[in-house]
Image (cartoon, rainbow, N blue to C red; front, side, top):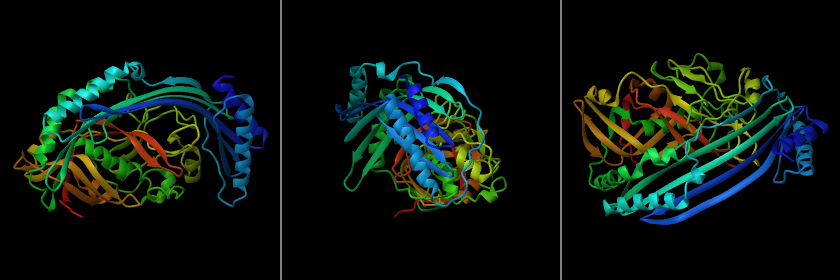
Length: 478
């Protein structure tokens, strides 16, 4: 039977067992990754997985069941068991469960891909990583590593409301990094970011990153950092590069605006949120330069898709407009509880996992300046970029970040390289201090966002540009 037939059988079985709503998602994913170190391939992983997950709603209780088999009997059993679990869940007292209205959709969608990454010969991929890591060694790195990852995912979604959607999402990316070891510490530099760069694109993304062109600089900077002066301690103007800005957005905005955290439904993994729904539309989140969008329609960004795992069409909306908090990441059930009229941000990382509210592309709209203009207009400050460490409290409010590299800014000029730069702040106070914003935006991909129990790995995108913040505490140690 076809994937759609299996999903339809599961949905019908759930309805026959008493569900008032059901949806089912067949998912087939192929995955490949390779890693190299010091001029040699050290790891290759290839796997493939296919199965069906079905949700059922009975009363106010959700049930979920998954099966690796796609024959009619297995699909119907999965649907019936999802309904039975939902019926048991409905016995627990709780608020009424509703779903924001949806229009039934029949459609197909595929992400853009010029070069099928799984069709590129393994030998060519391996040669690239071997050459890049050997090049970093030649330029002084004590340890040199490189990696790529590929996900090729097909989904077939059916709901009891009439949805019938298939999607083909291809994701690809990778990066390199060099480590130099001194007498008392080691220093690492990465390209293009500490975790690499990823998108809903093909192997053309790896070609554009051009690891070989950047390997010598990355190695030389890692060695230079060993003798660079430490980042000074105090309050100063802080300029964040775009890569670090992407993680700042992810941790202090993206997770904070997840509606399941705001409602307290999600708390076990990295806590809830400091935001209060009563303040939606009125809370001052940041300066008027702060415009954050939720946009899964961005071509090539890692958090892009045609439909989420509830069949809601991808659509752009505001999360923060002119510094004011105006939107959330939501699913159909959490949005209904909150009295909102939209979902569209629910995904699961596999067929055996329950879909939950996840970030899509949460990004900062660019501003009017260039990074060089921001530097030229800064008399005294520090430029930091490329994340090295992060810590944020379980309400997504107080944070501390460390970066791989910093530069002293004096009299509008970029000066000495600085070692072990760090900064700390409180979310709304920090964002309210943003006074200059660059136009040079890149949609950075995060392929390893953790959430939920059992833990799920989400793929998110974060358009981000360099920006300046005033009176930020830097150089914090310990």
